Image (tube, rainbow, N blue to C red; front, side, top):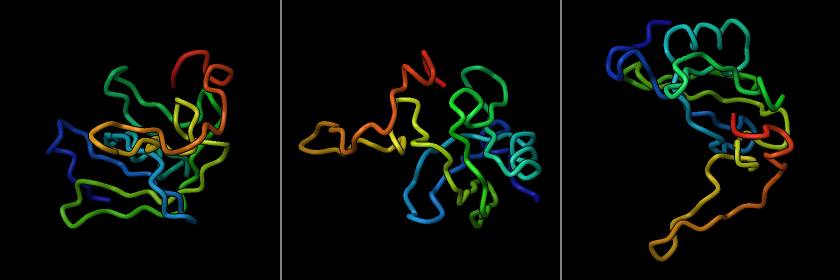
Length: 126
């Protein structure tokens, strides 16, 4: 499990992809501890750069990400996690995916419907 955590100050990008549809659900960052915890528990755990601590997706919402497979790139400095999302969505704004905007005519436009009410789930943001 030798990943290169040296390039981004101890972090690697983690792309979370639905194992059935292939849709990218979110991107987070992992330090070595978050990666180990992800492997050990089978639930995606990240390092929050803004809060300076680990967090497991679904701690607040219950919308966990169950790991099905982990892949790395040729440089061992990024991972793709093929996962099964549990719940109506992974985005703290209430969408199935964090990638719910498309650039059209120079402006970002929402391209999906909300799958849950983020205010009812978080009262803020995860």
